[in-house]
Length: 308
Length: 270
Image (cartoon, rainbow over all chains, first blue to last red; front, side):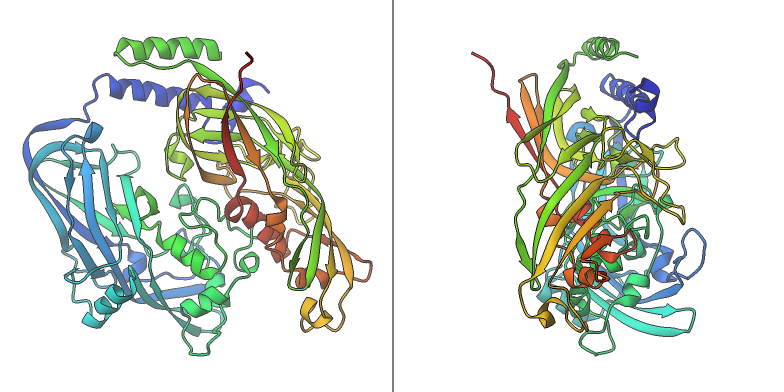
């Protein structure tokens, strides 16, 4: 096999290796990614992607659901917090045990603060992460989440309560769904594409933890969201097995025909490799796996994710 | 650029700032199948008779992430395609992994079909079943050639027909099945299987890798009643790409029943 062909293969080509090795050499020989002088403050705030607050529309645009469904969320309650970060080599580690519960459908535009680090060393915190564990009593209630919802999350170990509707635009028929799920996840090494990883602290800085609302409609666990397709036929096809006119965990767990729900290329577009939860034996597994990938920073900054 | 030159330059660069590094390593690796094991599911006794697999390339990364974009530098790699007997439990040499010392945490690989960033279509590599070939999956006259796997087997109803074929007017007592499966990706430049966890410190110490496949487990995800319904009376069924069970096989191969990666310290001759 000739060298040219090898270099074209995937994202691991030798040319890429070369650049990366040189970059690594540069960093190890005197990077600027170390702490600065003086102290600063970092406010950690919450933000919701528009897909949560406004929902998703059927259409052919990049962020539309391509197979003809509108989705709206009535509640999108998440337990989130336990922020941790450090500078290069683990220097100046900072952590917060504050855990908050927020309904991301109605976050105030001022972006509520979960926690803050005050009087810390300035500079780039190259490692930044957070968690979505199940809450415990005394959790910070960010925006008036109903007490009964918080109590239910604590009692059942849920990190998510998501309630919404899916409407088939061809005939206007609507179904309702309720996802009450335990998806304890660690998000780590968050980075905004094209920027140095983590967050920078200089004076009074802030970082927003952004939750996305469209991952359960992704066609896989993609490298980049620009390549993703949003599809909802699978949710529409779930049978209301207990006939309560609400799609719930019982119904999702009963949907075990994953080959029908999530067809692979060439007939379909789903790639279920690389998710945080395996095996994906039913629709509930798929939902939990996708929920475990939707934590970001600064809107679209990707984080590594793994089950907590 | 040759590996030797690359190695020498990296050694120079890293030694210049006080770091130490090992040299390049070559690790022989082999595939291994799992002997056909009859299993019973929903009244059907199923036995595979053929599971010819395409495999490769494979990359090993230091990152724990399942995102290959987080792995700009592969520690080890094998860039070719290879054919394996998935039902043969003996060791089947594939080739050598080349790379450098370091800590491996994840693997990314294809089942013999890759879609290069610079190519308009996926291609089945030379060395895989019926490869090399361009995979024209977008064509309405999709006739696959060059496969990730070729399967054959039989299913026999060993329960009441109502159990084997619920709701069906008729039910074959047995049928033969075949499937040519192409594990494809939706976007070029991405592997078919991402982020398989495997933890190994790669040193200069000789070692080997064995990749063990279990096609029997893949087929346990199949709805054999649905497969039986495809039998038009000839006693044989060919699983097509638009059958849900074709997708179920791909999901099993790429997510739910992944091959096992086993690192072993190589025995040295006395």
